[in-house]
Length: 127
Figure 1 (cartoon, rainbow, N blue to C red):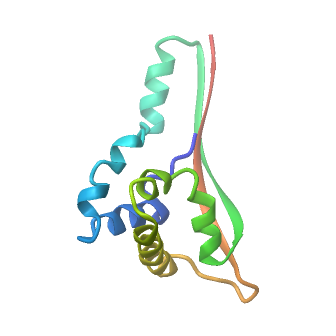
Figure 2: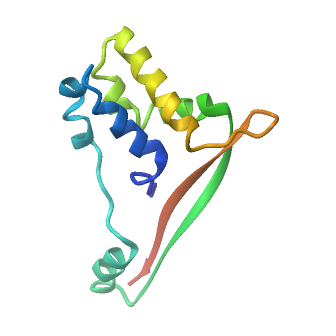
């Protein structure tokens, strides 16, 4: 399962959402997100019911085109709770503020590529 809520992509979403221009409208956006537990918490939950449990976390690095590639990547998932609450002109302003913050966290290679770290938690349990 994705484990990105503490990555710069999602931290920046929340930071931009606190802007006074739309903070009231976006106050409930985070409530649509399901937080996940730690790997040890899942291990404990599963171990109580299974004879063997494996839990691990892996970070994939997705090559995307510029910071806009990151925005496109999350536009139908992580950004959706924010964008769905904004009017068209507010969406554009939100995304511009988001783009500016992201640029501080992600280096762009000479060819325009940005590597997006995308952590995931995996579990295998055998009864």
